[in-house]
Length: 328
Image (cartoon, rainbow, N blue to C red; front, side, top):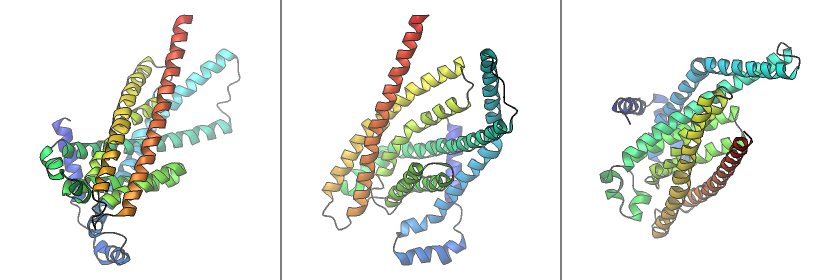
């Protein structure tokens, strides 16, 4: 990563973490949650940072919604309207683009595309943030390997770097859960809730070492978002856009396989082995472990299904391209 970009990320990441804890957290929220025994001290001490990170992501979302994407979406809809008018002219159909129904549909599509573009912007941003933090930790053997030579250290160990990774992951998934309640399906809401719970368990601390390990899944996420932007915002039948999507989709499939399937199945096996090794330790948390293993196992199965679907679609596209080339 270029040094200027890394410096900018470090500045934003540290600035959010260094924001002072508001007094009402100390006097009302934290004491109340402490009495419920639902959250550990480590979670309570960083609760305000989690909230600040969620607010930061929402501010960027609002910037995308009201400033960044409106001109791009307007241009995309203009291109689509021009393509539709050309097709209707060729077919000899009457153009009904001035009817009230058309204007209502146009406005509805405009609003939905602006909102979803802004949500995908935050998804892309959080991928960059957590991958930057995770790689910074994992690529330094002195911090990621040498202190974690045993199952006990990987399950019960904790340091500020892995703690920060959990904080940023929780901050995003908390925001994602709330925004999904308004603009996404139930599946996305459940995904946000489960992810929030998993990384909150990590912040206890418990299997905190595995937070950056499993966040390597996010390696495919930027290309998934690039694909979405390409399909939704690029002009139709654009050679440049089609070439971009072809290259991006190829990289997406490669990243998806290695990050989510090869790496994911290997690491869940390693995690289960570590759990087995510490099963008799008094600090071993059976239900927390069961939630994490079952959640990751379901996700790993879904990743295989999604990847097989991606491969199937790719083969269909290649066959169609081959048939079109032969017909010409």
